[in-house]
View (cartoon, rainbow, N blue to C red):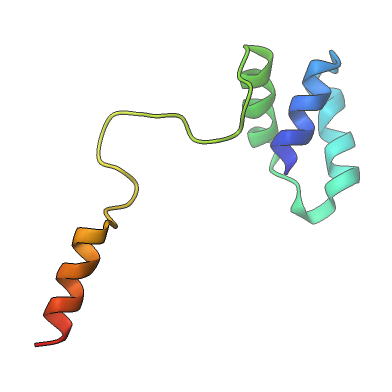
Length: 78
């Protein structure tokens, strides 16, 4: 949720050093660390429009698929 707030503040031209106290006041203990806020603020300032993970090379974060689930169920039923 912090990243959404940071995106809005970034779009209004708010500098990151002004964004951090506002986010901490609004979100309290649920707020990201200062470093993470700086990273997200920079990304939005450079044109990023969303908070979802972007595609990247390498192994997928999960190997769950219908085929794998079926294989495991078949093994458990032995």
